[in-house]
Image (tube, rainbow, N blue to C red):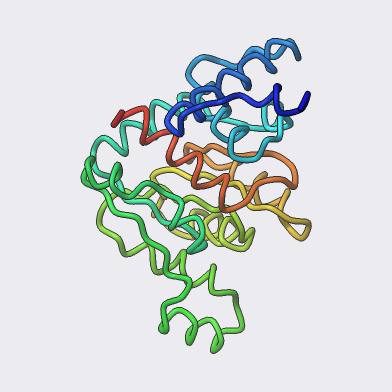
Length: 214
């Protein structure tokens, strides 16, 4: 009975608001002050993961948030490296701004070409995304090979992604792939270290979208 008394009785629409209040309170207790422009994005990542380490490891290039929001406002598309991230992005909000979300990982032509070349589907997906006419925000939450391929494409041509969200999770090539993106002149939001994931990539996209559509 004592435990039941501790339960907060909230309506569904109140739960998210209360969650963000708790996050803000926790950050204050930890003496963490997030830059105002970046706060809602980092908080949404914490909300998605329940992991306060992101308050220290989320890294933004200069004016990254303003640049990403301007791209979305102008109708930029989003390309993800997993269908999980694709499913998590609020496509209705993105469509309000004139953009579309894409994931080419399950496309038959991508799988076929990846097998023939002996590379990952993420590599071929990034190459395919290069053909999208709209400016593209790449949201990578799983495959470090996607970030490495973007880096190599930047180095070998005049092509540039409009923006990179680099938050793959794991152990092999994850940290170095993020560091490579941070060495380019492309605007980025990156989570340093091993943590990340498709849910984190989607959360970052949604945080930006909600700033523009809510």
